[in-house]
Length: 389
Image 1 (cartoon, rainbow, N blue to C red):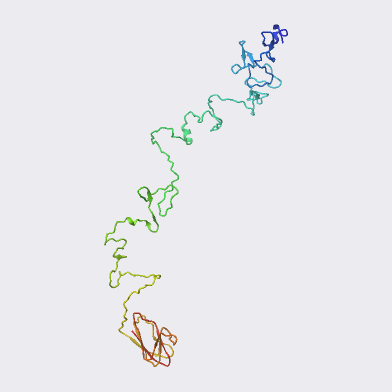
Image 2 (spheres, rainbow, N blue to C red):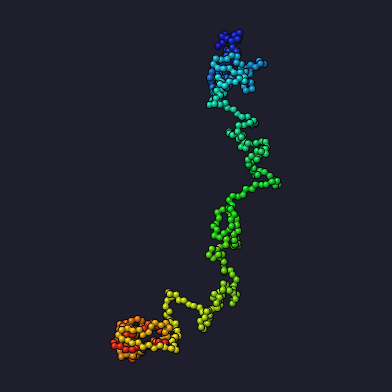
């Protein structure tokens, strides 16, 4: 374009013109500028997108006839003089149950205009703190989101009714010390781990819960030990720590050096008495290699009984069994041999002593036989005399 194409007198056709060569060539502000036209400010076409706009995108004239760039401080005034057939025009304060058209639009992060909706809500940044007042629909208000500090301060004292409605936790970690005066009754919570009260008893197992009682402990010089014992013998006692016994008079449980179970023991030689100690030899005791000498016991009697027994070749009893027998004598008064047996039923093949005719057998000594004695003759018949004392 040249000045011959657009003269100064034709300015009524353009709201704004621009020249890059001192008035030689003029350009409308919406036309693209060529390579020789400076190009400091880009020109935009409809629907163009730019994250950072260069220059001033829009100017308007205020009431003082001053050009203003559109900004938050100087917004562009818009006056809708006539409605459109495409939608409903609303005035300030209008109420409509269903809004026709787009009521509000905003620019997203990709520099695209968006209609405000549930899917694309209008982002709002909270500036400063906001007081919450009024009547709420529930007692506890849920609060979500990110807060400017971890602990939210709450102002205003709680009323007496609020304090009594539920327990209020109180931390004493940061509360200074104060004197406590008892102006009422304090509720104390006891430790529920303590068992129910019960009498102490013997043979009680080691407890698995805290126990209140008295236990006998002994100090060993460093630590404390429980006393030992059992249900059979009771308390264990260390007898090695007892004092020395007094010779001749000390008595522990009825036993001392002169008594056994309270009876004086017999010592030295003499006759046996209640204090003579009995000795029992075990059944598995080996036999003595040297016999113990003993004095012979001489049987004595002041009376005797003589019995005449008729004998033959059939066994006959000479003497019956007699535990009081001290001695006996048997005389064969026949003309044949007499066979005498210590026991029952004598015969020529079962006998103890063979007595020739006219001989005697003496039954005496420290130990004598006191059982039954039988006799049988080798032949014929005759009398045999048995004397017992």
